[in-house]
Structures are given as structure tokens and as C-alpha cells.
Length: 175
Image (spheres, rainbow, N blue to C red):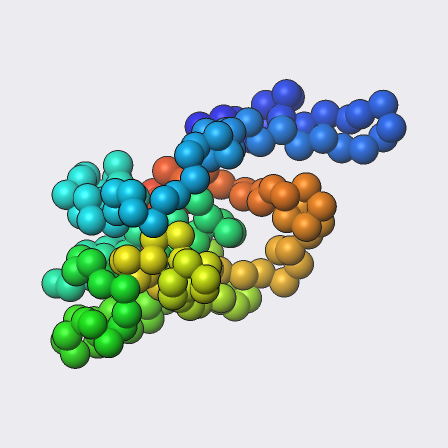
């Protein structure tokens, strides 16, 4: 992961504007856009090593993982092992554990990162914004007062203060 203090990441332009170089985002930008019929990454994640897959917690029916393309630092996903697109397709036991996992994820983020609040929710179907519409997942996004700035609006870029592997290690310390 890049060193955030590296001199090439921050520079002053001739107009006096600060330039932020987030070159580690290029693989995401250049990656082929998700096709709803393409392979489901949530199905194979549980078969991988937790550190490699960024899985933080595993339950009987669900797992909690760091989002590889986060909206904010510490953005987690709670994902059922079963590939379903709707909550009502989960068994009552899996649905109850799903909610318990969301609560545990917010608890973990509160202990580790001390956010001021959360955005927590689902995107159902492609029209609802789901990138993987066939496999429901709940987003848990920690938020802090003042964490929104001009970058997403003007620069179409999110600035994250920590690398994913560092964040995974930080959160694992609080489990």
C-alpha cells in the first residue's frame, strides 16, 4: 500500500491548489464494470483466508467483511452465505443472525473508530443501486461530523485515510 506521507501524493500546483494523487484507485477505475450476470464475488469470499478476503467475523449463516470499494474508512458489509436477493428469502434463523451481525459490526466500528454515526442499509435490484443484485448485503458505513467534502462531488473521488489491510488489522484488534 502507498505511504500517505510520500511526497508524490500531495503537491502544490502553480495555481496554489493542492493536488491529491490517489494512484492506488486506478485499478478500480479501469476494472470492467460489474455485469449482473457475471460471477458473484460474495460466493467465493468465505472460501478464502480471512486476511486475504478481509473477512472480520463469521457466523453460521452470515459473514462480515470490509468493503473493497468503500464509501468511507471502515465501510463493512454483512453478507449471508446463501445467495439470495431478498431478505424474505432467508430463513428466520439466518435473518435474525443477519441483524445480529449488523449490530455487532456497528459495535466493532464504535469501539475501534469511534464514529459519530452510521449509514446502514441495502440496495435492492439494479434500479436500487445494487452492484451485485443477486446476493443481498447490508452496508455499514461509519460517519464523522465533517467527513464529507468536495472530493466526491467535484472530483468524483473518495479520500480514505487508511489502507484496507491496515483497517482490517485495526478492526481485528477489537474483536
